Length: 106
Image (cartoon, rainbow, N blue to C red; front, top):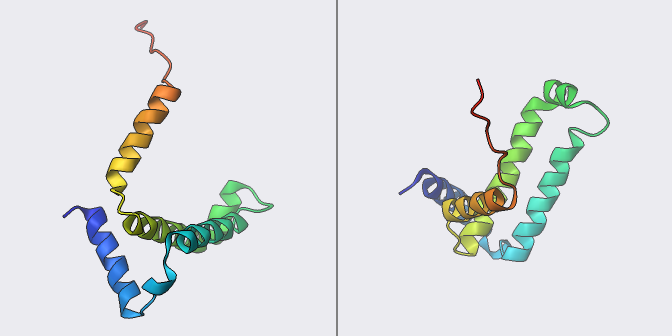
């Protein structure tokens, strides 16, 4: 079992212990992910990135975790392989946005 699958299992156990699965349909998970991402943005609003990280580092970590938890739950609910869809998207982005050719000049 991959680390990601173990992490999803841990999240699902937490959810199931609280009987929250009934609230975790794809639509509501997507909404929750967006809300948590907006909460992350609040930490950066009206200040520089450096200042935001200095002032809100702990909350930034918590909001990123919330976004990631909902994203993993959504993938699990839709029976998507997280590693596969990420690798596929990176490949697609590489084709859409190829890296500039590197010069062999020294």
